Amino acid sequence: MPLSITQRVDLLKGLGRPTIRDYIPLLFEDFAELRGDRCFGDDPALVGGLALFDGQPVTVIAQARAGDIAELQRINFSMPHPEGYRKALRLVGQAEKFRRPVICFIDTPGAYCGVGAEERGQGEAIARNLREFMMAKTPIVSVVLGEGGSGGALAIGVCDELAMLENALYSVISPKGFASILWKDGSREREAAEMIKITAEDLRSFEICDAIIPEPEGGASRDVGLAAGNIASWLRGSLGRLRAEDFNALPDKRYARYRKMGSFSECAG
Image (tube, rainbow, N blue to C red):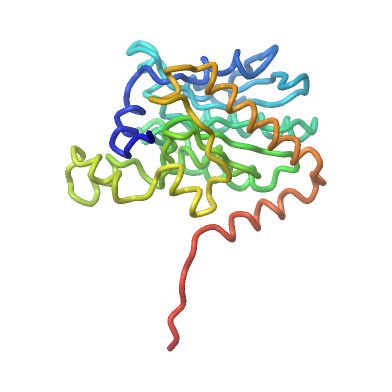
């Protein structure tokens, strides 16, 4: 039985859900992590590197989640700094040069909004990623593993195809942030989650999400190997389609994909 939205919120807030560190050895071979943005430093909240997927070279970019409290603090509660996004941008540029597909894994409540991050250009870093990901002449696919919050998620979410794990959420703002702004009460996040249409099913109906990847009953933590196998199956099909494309035409197709998202109506007069 599918989990309710409030059950999904609770599931994603816990520390037991599989993270990218769990998935990498199950999905890829010979993963070599690359660190630093060549500008300020390295951000452990965003993991990136080179790997083989089905024997073919790919670039992996992923937001990190924690399995315990110490790791949660080390990765800044999964909120990347600008140097994390600049690291991602560096890796996309390298992938484009060598015509490697890029696989992104989204799992963050949002970008860090502290004073240091703002001083180092958080908004500019996210905006530049949106532009450069849109224009990259190499395939980019994204998978929402857990929570995809705001511009912090979208900064590695501009892609040719996007999939969500069955219990993942993807939103313009976190439910807690929504409740804090609308009602000045962050404790009403579960009520907010019911309102703002952020489930994989909602996003699929809006044509923002291209596919929903099944999870084991009760969540991916029940059988991470099965969840990884389902992710791999989707990646195989997606990359197979995109490798057959003219890479030079991908930016225009990506632009058209985003232009047709959502729906609107016009009133006469």
